[in-house]
Image (cartoon, rainbow over the protein chains, first blue to last red):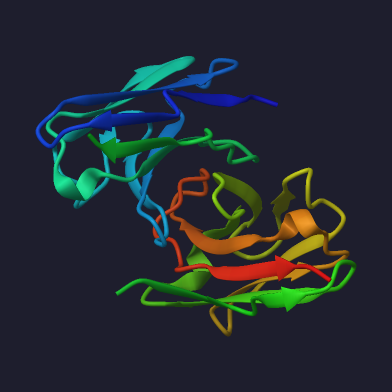
Length: 107
Length: 119
């Protein structure tokens, strides 16, 4: 099975900072990669699909890139509502494998 | 408004059984793949199972294969997860999620229901 590994597992940043989270697949998955945001006590929310397509209603400060095995989620200027845990996930598979998550905390 | 509402969680004994339900509204339920994803307390997201739009195709994570059964009733706009032979490591919040394209892309998610397996 293909494994998804995120880094870092957590980071501290300030409002206005740019942030990049990395997700690596153990084998090539083309661009079949989603990103979700989860706030404490809430259900996850789809941010990015197919590695770089912004889900409707998601602010443009979120962007995704990558293909093959290496992917990134970038938040261009952190806002207070962006402090959350972010998960990557392999799509287009019978097994919807998630990364372990990256928690973005306030510095 | 698209809405998914899970129910059926609670405290259950190891070896026991339960059935989770996910009531869908605001969209044509019978057109969509649906999935279950779980999250143990303080842990990450783990995909559990998926079912295609007419219920003829299902997939399971290895950790639940043979113990859990996903099903749906399109006439009732409801997704189910039958959970048998419960173990302590099945303790988690269980989310149902719509898969608009049948590609394991989940949007939206329900609010989740907590299943606790303990004696």
